[in-house]
Length: 289
Image 1 (cartoon, rainbow, N blue to C red):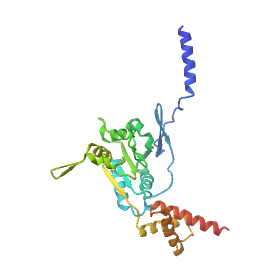
Image 2 (image 1 turned 120 degrees about the vertical axis):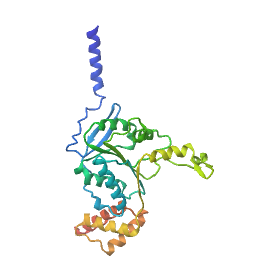
Image 3 (image 1 turned 45 degrees about the vertical axis):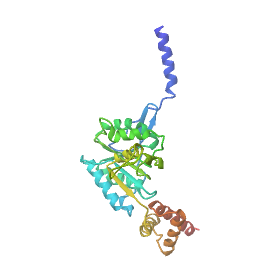
Image 4 (image 1 turned 90 degrees about the vertical axis):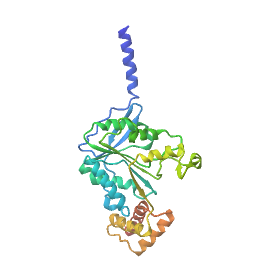
């Protein structure tokens, strides 16, 4: 009977092998500087990835204050000094994600390691943090375009890791997030129904307090705003020079850059890069016949 049961269990495990995820290769953090977190039903795994590009901090114009604050915060963290979780929020295309990529390129040599987690995978964030807790390296866990819908409970896992659990985040992990929303959660008029005036003090209701409490757990807030025209044109000139080589940013390019921004509905670093790709690509195409 025992032999028969053992045989049946072996057959069952053979069938289950086809459904189990492959055993992950451990990331060699001595040589790798970035990884993606992939959740699966049994937890999750880290997959090493090369840096996306060679973007530098000097490539990002018009956000000098934000760059300096993020670099100082990250360097303090890398040296074992007190540092804050960071929320980069503001206008789309204004450099929030780009500054994190450039930060990795700038500070990887000083020990920075970056792990990106998708906002849809945040429920497994505590598992990821525990995997990093006992590593000798120092990690920034990065979530791009972070926001939550009204019925999304994943933000509770983020709150717990940031400041809510008894153990707290490990000293070798910081969380950086980018978002178009400062408070991360959707806000409605109904949220204000619980607000009341006590003496001369405004007391928010539970709904507002819940939404504010999440972003409050990020100690460093950096706001990003749409560019003015002069900064936008400086960015266009920079990227045309970077990707165009012999293609110059002349009066014709300047006029086309302004028209491009008008058609796109706004001025931003992303729009400047897109214009440069459009302008340089078209110039080289016609030059080659």
